[in-house]
Length: 389
Image (tube, rainbow, N blue to C red):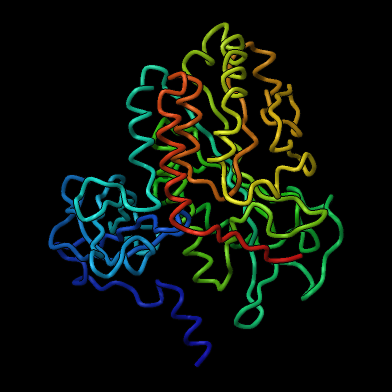
């Protein structure tokens, strides 16, 4: 029986018939739940072929079961805002990424910050901000019903020290390649702007890159890439861990390094503009750290390729600083830079928005972004969990 259950996890095990999708489209509506980290989804079978967002209706779900409402007023509305091909179902079926709203259809639902980012990017369009985000994560396997341990680690123990795993090749050095290769293929099939992947410094740790994305696209494509990775893990019985420091001790944490440029930094003389950005980013360092992920202070210690969370600095080619200026940017006198502070569990909408706001709009929306996140944090306790000590 167990073999049959495992076989059924491959969704192509039961193929579509020629009649199943005649004049229909299966649309998976996905959204961010009340934790601001979790993704949820439910399926709608439409009575027509869907080719654009405009054909999709708003929908509702039970917010009392997603940490976003109580049972007396539980309806949360979801509005489709980005459309992707469904790489799991194929056959012209779709995934609709949605914004969440309270019952008034105006107030963003708890854990939803895309609406705030949209306001920022509507005013920064003339500078055409580009983003490339490097999502680091761990793959864990379950041991029993409650215990999890990193993929490739000896059961209940620790592996050989870091050094041979980064971009590693071979069974002795690399764990989980089947997962990440499947992720690469499905993301590209869905239309996600995936730029690459690699094994990371710790065993069982990986990274994928999203970009180059313009403005709000950055958050949309990152959320869809995360969703696809979680679905693959679900099918294979593997947990995807976005905690920035799931393993304490002499092991790298996970970040979401954010590469960024504007029209001005990409133009001739752009390096002088970048220097001005550094001044603005230093002034708002604490506000950025506040929005850069839960539990990030455990990661930003000044070791393991990080700067301390308490200081702001930038270096040319330095991976132990808050901001890294790539050698290519220095050589060409223009280009992009990398903010190394964001944690792996960031809300990509908040992070991309505050970077653009700080560097282009002179922090016009900074207070609003910070207060929106502060209200969210006040509504729930910090649920960051140390998985291994």
